[in-house]
Each structure stands twice: as structure tokens, then as C-alpha cells.
Image 1 (cartoon, rainbow, N blue to C red):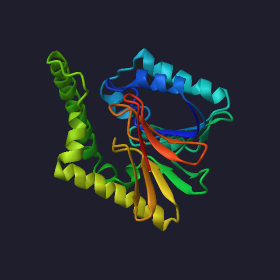
Image 2: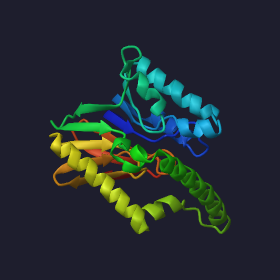
Image 3: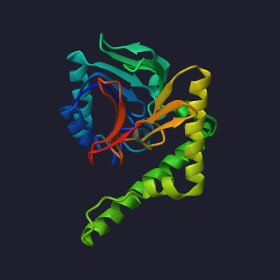
Length: 250
């Protein structure tokens, strides 16, 4: 497919559960004028704990660089897991690759969007980093448990993938409350700054919704959901789930 722009976040290269091969397939099958990475592309936190870098992770980086050389405008927006880049931004690497903390995006539909990872609006990440790191360990544990649960489900003849972390996000009251607060805070900020919408990542929950008149678009992640926000040439934004080929429209 050909798009005006593709927005992806939370690939977490350098971790065991990064779906780098699936993302590489996505890059091969989809083209765009703009390819915008909305934070947490390389997981510096995980690499500090235990370095795990598969060949597919290098292949993703090489594919991105090739796209930049072929005139795709590539923008990296820093996230909390790749915050090691923040002291160096803004950073230009050639004519088609830029690293920034956030950016304004003027869409075909005439609207202006703030593109930011979202961690600046997460009080836990910003004020209690130790707790955020502890939560990251917890997320890794959930992913490990989920891996073994799905092995058991396959042995029982259940082929459909099931996500424990998604179940927690969708059903545990404190998690649902955190996500709702996060979405509302971002939308409120965007409205005060006179944006029409906001595009983010960070919480690994792909979404398109209107919040008090503001378009809220979350790219999701490439650890489980394998999702991206895309902008069509007719001005329409969608969330695409690559692994399952599902589409959710605004």
C-alpha cells in the first residue's frame, strides 16, 4: 500500500519480544512519503539490563536507512526508552532523516497535529522513574507468562493469539483509569495549544477517538498489537493492525 504518512511507535528493538520480523514485513509491503517513528524504537532500558540484539533488529535499522536514502522523509521522535538520544536533538542525519523530541504535523485534511511519544504527560515516568522501570520489569514478566500461556493454548488446539497484557489494560480498573487519564491529559493539552489532534504512543494501546473535539490517535506497539497509524491520500487516518490485517477508523 501507498500512504502519505505512516506513524509507528514502541518497536522496542533490543528486547526479546520485539516483533522486528513482522515490522520488517510491514516496511517491505508499505510505502509512504513520510515515515514517522513516535518513540521507543530502540529500548535503551532493556539493553542496559541484558543486551539482546537479533539480526532482524539490525535488518529493521538498515531498511529504515535505505528508505531514507530513497527520499522517504524519516523522523525519529524520542521516547522514554530511547531517551539517550534526547541530549543530541534536534539532530539531522542527511537530508531525509531527523531526530526530534516532538513535531507539528500538517495533514492533508488541513488539520494540525502534535506528534509526541507521550511520556512527558505520564506523571509516573516523569516524577518516579524508579517506579516506571519497575513497571517495565513487570511488563516483561507478563509477556513471558503470556508466551507460555499461548504455547499451552496451541497445544489445546486454540490457535487464536491471546494477550494477557491487553486483558489487563481493558479490564483492570486501575489500568483502565490510567489509560483514560493519559488520553484525556494529552487531548486537553492539544486543545490548549490549539492543535486539532494528537498522535502518540507510549501506552501500547492503539486507538483513534475524539476527545472533546480533539482527534486522539495512538500508534500502539510492535511488541504485541503490531499496529500503525496511517494517513491516506484522501486525508483519512486509520489504525492498521498488521499481524491480523484489521483496520480501525476514526
